[in-house]
Image 1 (cartoon, one colour):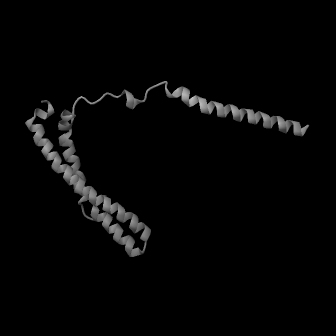
Image 2 (cartoon, rainbow, N blue to C red):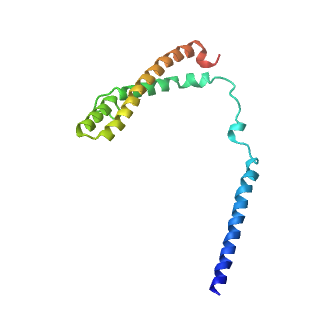
Image 3 (cartoon, helix red, strand yellow):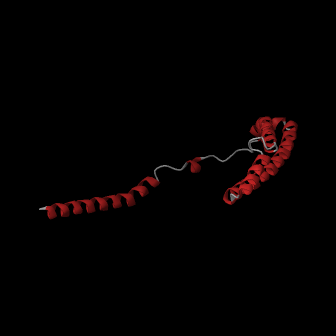
Length: 139
C-alpha cells in the first residue's frame, strides 16, 4: 500500500514537472511580441538641447565649483584628495596592505576626477560665452 502511494506521488510530481517545463518554454515566446520596448518607441532628438544646457549653466558652474573646492580641501575636509591620501598613508603605516591598495585605487580615481572636473569647468566657460552670444540657445 505504501509503495503504491509513493509511486502515485512520483508520477504526479513528474507530470507537474513536465507541465512546468512546457509552460516555461512556450510562455516567454507568447509574451515577447506583445508590447514594444520603451527604447523602440522613443522619439529621436530634434535638437542638441542647447536651450536646456544654457538654462542649467549657472547651476552646473556652482556644482563644479563646490566639487572642486571639496576635492581640493585639506585633510580635515570629507571627500578631499588630501584626506584620502592621509588614509592611504595611515593604512600603509599600520601594515594593512589590502586596505592601502583599495584606498590607493580610490585615490587615483579621485585625482583623475579633479582633472576631469577642471576640464569640464573650462568647457562650461565656452558654453556660457556661446549661450550669451546666441540668446541662451534660442537661435
